[in-house]
Every structure is written in C-alpha cells, then in structure tokens.
Amino acid sequence: MLDITVHKIAHVVLMARELDRAEGELRAFIDRLTEEEQASLVAVMWIGRGSFEPEEIEEAKRTAYEEATTPCADYLIGTPHLSDHLENGLDALGLSAQDDEDELIRGG
Figure 1 (spheres, one colour):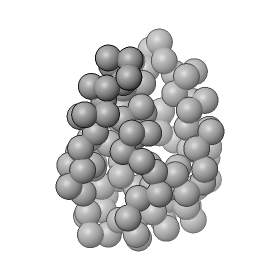
Figure 2: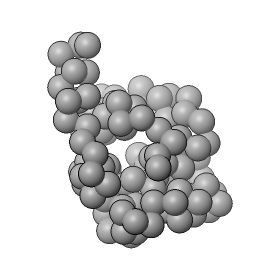
Figure 3: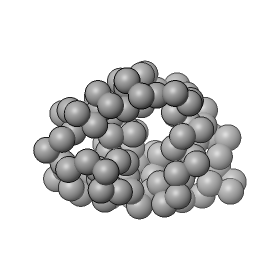
C-alpha cells in the first residue's frame, strides 16, 4: 500500500509541528527519501486533507508521482496543517504514527 514506513511519516509529523526551528532538518529528511517514498508521503497528506479517499491510495500515489512539478520538500512545507493532514491520512488508512512519535520523542 505505502512505499514509506509509518516511522518515517512520524518523523515528518514531528518536524512539521516544529517547523520554525526544524525546517532545514525536515527539508533534508524529505530530500533523502526516494521518489516512491515522497509520492506516498504526498498521497497520505492528500488523503488526510480529503483530496482522495483511502481506497484511492494507489491513484493518489500515481498522481503525486506524475504531477510532481516542484521539489517535494517545498510542496509539503508550504502546505498548511501538514502534520494534521498526515496524521488524518494515516488514520483514514487504518494506520497510526502515535507509537512511533512517542518513541521518537523519547529519543528511541
């Protein structure tokens, strides 16, 4: 279903919440992802904001991959409420980043 781990999405969620101090780190993290991981990340965000339904995940990933005209980090960082959309997208897909987020916060 996803070409990115929930753990990596949890990293993005946490950094997006602290964008004022973590933008450089978030940008570097997203830039290191593969194109497939970036497309999945965008697709989860789109599902979370209601642009696609959970059952349209493959179409959302394909659209994200085919229509990528700006660097993924620029696109995502410029998206209001990014962390909320990612968490909502995971929830809609029946996934949760909460355990991963807690682990990352604890430094695990």
